[in-house]
Image (cartoon, rainbow, N blue to C red; front, side, top):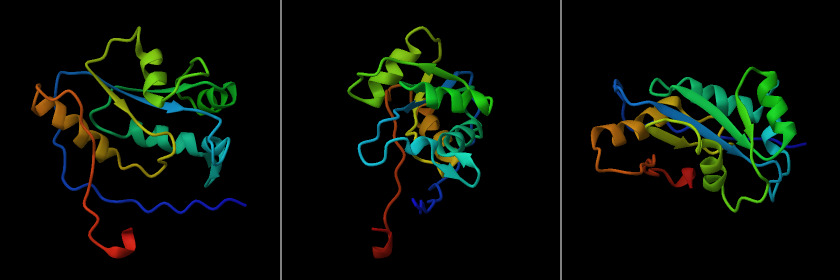
Length: 155
């Protein structure tokens, strides 16, 4: 039995997001996890983990589209089964960023979010905050979300 214990962290701000720029969230999803193969298909409250991540990404106000980039038909099938969009990539990418690059090479979006596939409790407003940093300052080419660890128990 595998038990997932994920504690959500509230974002450290709010994103009042309105921009003409288009944004896509790409979720690189590799089946062969080194510690838990197939974990993205693990059942959490009756749905596979990848569905929880996908739906959280869809809930971000600043996102126009969500896409799963996977090297495995089992993940692709799970995504299409719940109505999501998935694309198959080659299996030998050294990183999720490489998988994302392949999946988006023929797409046209102003901003691309690389969302980890094993974050089923990602707060949609965290995605909005990361994108807001980019739209507020066009000189910034990359953004990441962070928050301080304030309690020893959080470590």
